[in-house]
Length: 103
Image 1 (tube, rainbow, N blue to C red):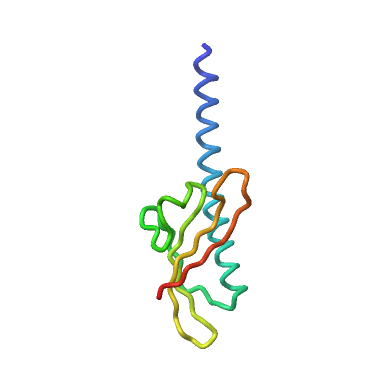
Image 2 (cartoon, one colour):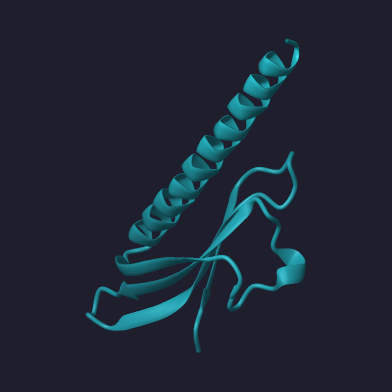
């Protein structure tokens, strides 16, 4: 009868991890949108990218960093596309925001 509490504990752990991951991704989206709006851009489109990281390398992007393809409209009405990354590179580091525009 010890197996039921162990399985229940694992189930709770897996569900809690999934909820944490979804909340982190939603926070990343909100933080990137906020940083772009503070810079005077209107966000037209944001797409989360898992495998194609664009301007960011697989070698320097950790699993706790989120990469988005962004399309924004500048104050003059011109559209601009780029890559945004938000998150932490190490567990103890603070979350950071990086933006690289397409040429």
